[in-house]
Image (cartoon, rainbow, N blue to C red; front, side, top):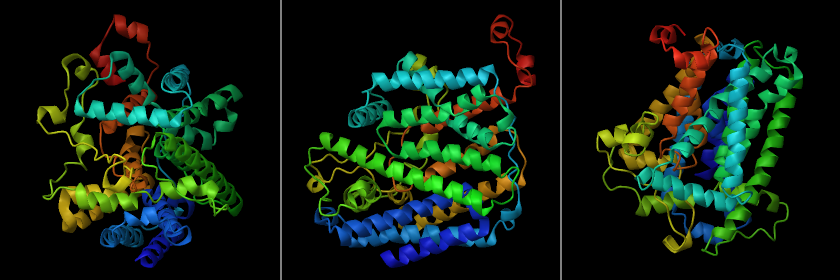
Length: 469
């Protein structure tokens, strides 16, 4: 099953490259295939090179093959949609062309997000990644269950920091635009600050997926800007971009190992990976564990966690049910679609260190959520729909012109879901609300026909004027 999975993944990834060349990085399925190829190889290393018996003891062969079936089916769906839907993309320009503006309002927003990010870093645990991760998980669980609510200041800070999401996309576009070199040097430096803010906030979460998200979002913006004026890349520029991606992989691998070593301090299971006899693998021990931890998790969740009767949308649509109006919940208490419809909270199935023989992993892939919601047979239909939607939003960037940043919001959300497919916890919580609001407000700021005088607006509020803006 491992060999078949690798062959299908490699073939589909090769077809993506053949059809789109470097534009394939704008397709969300590309990163899915890269991650799963590395994931399967990591499993092979732990199973047949290191022979990590503790790791293997948690993996049920039946459930492992079931997971590989999901991955193979997803890859085959991508293969057929790429081959038969959306021809000629390789020779087209991207048609997303936002207004290129770096005015005082944009600069103020960038610097405000950066300042708040620094403040959060020094008030949430400093450089102790494990401690920050522990605090983030505990706080998010309390917020999701309604045990606590964010205070007004923390809520505002949290909302402002989410503006870094559209800022990463927009500044990535600016960096690759043809007019960027004519911008004064001071402004060019400021444009890179969202990248730094993103790294700081990823560090605060103590996770690694957030670290990937920062660079992926910036890179998507960069590609959108570059292919706005270039249909193809020459070999020299392709080599530069690919070499930078390899450098990022090495940096991320080192960061993963660092995070793994930090988290050992908070683990009571005594479970350790043995790499002392494999010196050449030791620098990559963190990413090998990171990319293979979901295999035992999938087996354990299939045995002990998933519902006996499928409940459609319970987990996969949870982000929508948490949608709420800003500040209302701070005044009137919990006020969301979930609370209005009296939908019960679905908790993240966290496995303590002393459960299931000591496995402390907390993830089991997105496929466990799809299975939990829709059952085995209907899961394949849901996957097919998601692949078709992904292809639609990818093609749309090359066929429908737009200047609005909200135009890309569905694509960014789908991209996020694709590259997080090795996780099961990213569908929980109200992140979608914060993302939507940050993109919506930033879109308004960027496309206002005239610069807004905020002091004057407070004194004389005219709804018709706001509509015209």
